[in-house]
Length: 125
Image (cartoon, rainbow, N blue to C red; front, side, top):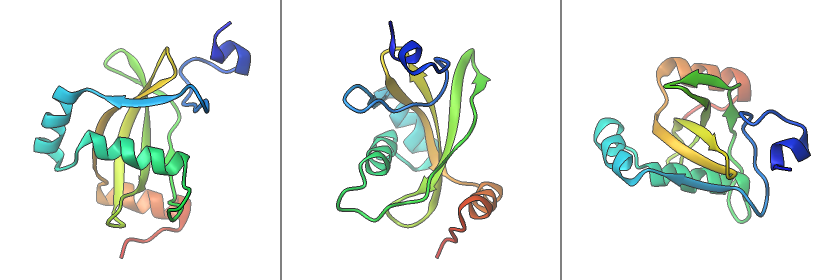
């Protein structure tokens, strides 16, 4: 029986299973993301790790979307706050082996920042 069956959730739901979940990204896609958006996918991994394990760091607001289909796979949008206290936007997908795969990471658009403020009350400095 896999994790989704044990938890009685659909396999496309965003989930964290302590002791099993990993976060990764495609190194080739990282270069493209840095060029296009100015952010490293590795930074998204670091941000997600701090959100999951906020020990010793200031907790940050974070919002996750419902699942949606893009390019034939189920994805989730996340909006959070980076180390410079800027609102950032990332897209992830869940892999079958409890791996969160970061697909994209960038500065949130003005509309996304407004939506994040509405959801969390967070206002950028």
